[in-house]
Image (cartoon, rainbow, N blue to C red):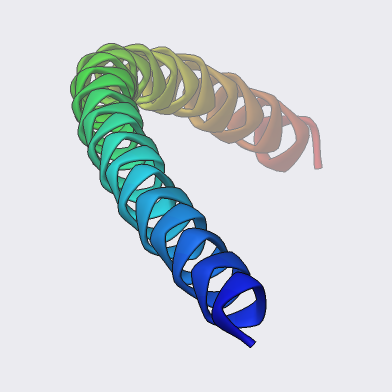
Length: 91
């Protein structure tokens, strides 16, 4: 019987050691996971900043295109008015 008790104590000691090592491993994994998540969040924030800058540049390009469109639209309206005036004079 004493051999069984000794085995149980040894097993429970090993189990406690395994549990302790397992919890250390889990803590290390948890810390590594947390560091990885923080790094990913920083990377996402940097990407969002780059996207905001690109969007601002795109908005400037769109504003320029709208100005050009208005300019050529105004020229087209003037040409159509001249054409209309010529056709009225011919009648």
